[in-house]
Length: 339
Image 1 (cartoon, one colour):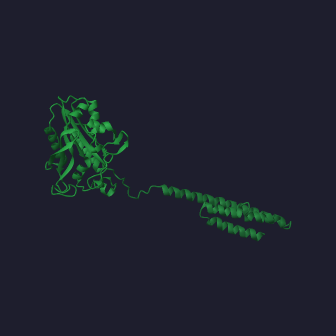
Image 2 (spheres, helix red, strand yellow):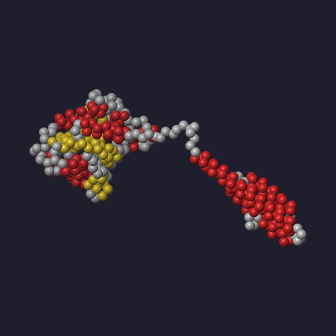
Image 3 (tube, one colour):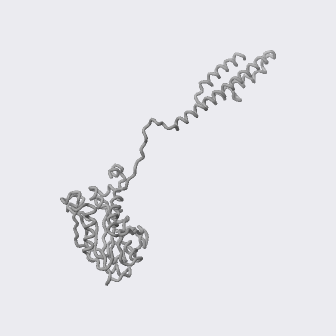
């Protein structure tokens, strides 16, 4: 029995010292000192010993138990201290490492272009007006002098979200909302996102940004429109940028004109962006139809006005030399980080 106790003590001392963590140490304790451990089994066998050996073996068993309890507590403190030190080291700041510079954000090329466009018109005395992206039929078509048979109203051209609700296909409804609330003179630009059922290709997308302008006052002529847009083109792209007006039709302006700028990407030589014409259409313009002015209660004998709308993506493509509109919406950081 004494030999078993000494062997148990030697084995337990070695196992306690070799325990690498608290989990292993607990396994050692259960094996040697637990309620069903080896020491308890030996002590339960004391009753089978002769009477004269019981005191000697019992004292030895107590000494072994006390020693192992002490060694166990000591090793447990060592492991706890080591774990705390490792956790502290893991959270410590290594001042020898180089600093990690945060990624610096920057404006999206579309927003940067739109901001510059707005800045130019603010310098010309215009103010900024905004409106909802989900509009109703009246502001989208009826108030803008659209005839009932106009194809723009068809579901194949416009995103309808209800019987009388649709995603605006242009920011022109903002002009109506402003004129309903304000007497002339009116000088506004209306920036915003628009939606059309366009087939996505290098120059078209179902979602796009637009900037429209409106000026209503006494004695306003088409020459004022051309002069204003010429100043805008020169401020945006420099004095070598040419602007072309071609007759066109829009329900809310009469006369109307398509606006095109020299294709900066090919220098007017022709490329896939400008459909090999040398010109890139950027929007439409014209004199506000008297019917539109009458709808908002303006005196059409006294007031005239002009309006225009240009696509921000088209101007951004010209500004940065981008040949595919889809890149703006790709989310590819390799593309966006160039600007």
